[in-house]
Length: 50
Picture (cartoon, rainbow, N blue to C red):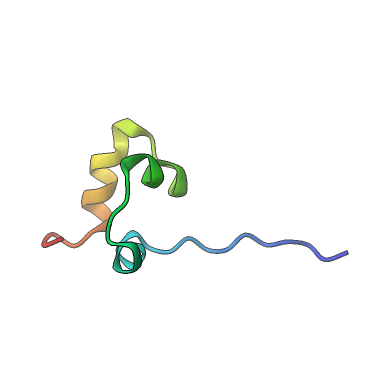
């Protein structure tokens, strides 16, 4: 039996290059971020000019 391995998460900036728009709930679920921590996560993950 083959053991399944989860895929590595894409960085948020790479993900946005493809999809351009995400809802905050999508970011919360995909990156396991609490709603109260979302703004700080986005500021940390995205370049300042985005």
